[in-house]
Structure formats: C-alpha cells, structure tokens
Length: 249
Image 1 (cartoon, helix red, strand yellow):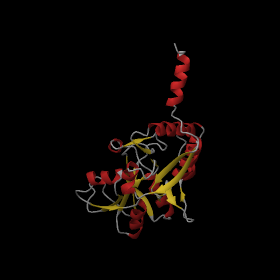
Image 2: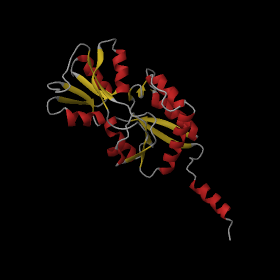
Image 3: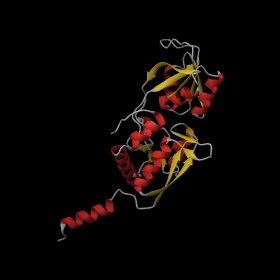
Image 4: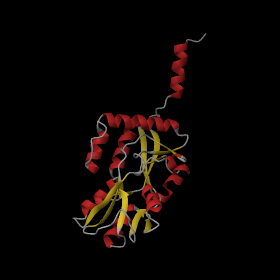
C-alpha cells in the first residue's frame, strides 16, 4: 500500500496554485484613468495599478507585459483572450461577477463623488435640469441613469478624462465618478472645480478581473495581494498616489 504522506505530497505538487517561474502574463488596463492608470509623457503606461501590478508580477515570478484597451470593451476582450487580467480601477460588483472572476480587493470600497464649477449650487434633494457627465459602462453611469435620468441629461463619455475636460469647458454641469479619480482633477484645477453634493456609495472595492476558470492564476494573484498588503506595499502606493490610508497594515 502506498504511503499516504507520499500520496498527499504528490497530490499537492500537482495541485500547486503557484505559477511556474517565468510564466508569461498580459495585463490589461485602460491607460486613461489617472492616477489609477495612464499614459505618461514619455508614452509609457504608468500609475498606481501599473506599479502595484508590476510588484505582484515580481512576487508571482511572472513575466508580465501591459496592454491598453478602451473601457467599454475591456471585459469582452479579457474573455476573448486578448489579455489575462484587468487592472483598471474596476469595482467588484455582482453584475460583473456573472461574466468574470475577481481577485481580492487591492483598493477598499470608496465613495463616488460629484464635481462642478466652484460657486455653482444645486438642489440635490430634487436635482433637475442639469447635464451630468459620466464614463460609459461604469457603476457611476448605471447609477446616474437609474437615479437622475428622469429630470436631467446624462452625457456618456468613452473615458473619464473626456468627461472631466467637458466639465472644465462648461459642456456639462456635473461629473459623477470615482472619488479617487475626481480628486486629482479637482486638485489640478487650482480652485476652479470643487466637490459638490453627497458622497454616493456604490459597488465594492477594486480588484483584478480574470476569466472564469483561470483558478490557478486567481489563487496566485490573491496570494501576491495578501503579501503586498501584509508588508505595507499596498498602503505605501495608496499613500503615494491618493494620499489615503493606511488600510491594510
């Protein structure tokens, strides 16, 4: 009879969730949602998620490359095999879980906020007759359509940066977006723009999206995220890019 300890050891070896050294991964991102991810002046992908993603790849001993994709097709192109993960400021939601898996969060659930020109006032108890800019296919877009569309105009944009540019140009009255994204826009405006209205809590934390069935990769990524939280790396990067935290250590 085979030694049960040897049998268990063999089973563990074949079932190991750790990626093989040098495993190649393509990391998908948008490249247009600072400070989460963006294209820098030198043409390279940069930002919080790029720096964190590269750290996670090093922990997994994976050979990672980055690929940008427009937001509105970012999930279909993951499913279609154009890349292996999504790191693009994507909130974990039950609706998205129907088509893809998510890692553990690497950014805790944070509120969505609204920004407008300083000095403008709005009746948020009965918001009416304003144009609200949102990035299409986001949790904020869905919220705006459900809660504001009856009395206001909802204007959808391909990127968050485009909605912010139209706010600065006066083409929309309000932009509704993730607070971390809007903070960088408001801070850079030199007082021209400001936060308005209540914080809106929708969606969960932000995680890495993966294809259904990529279970070995999911376990490896979760292990790397746990390590990066435990040694302070995630909190350090959150402080660097968003001036928030610590959350995890």
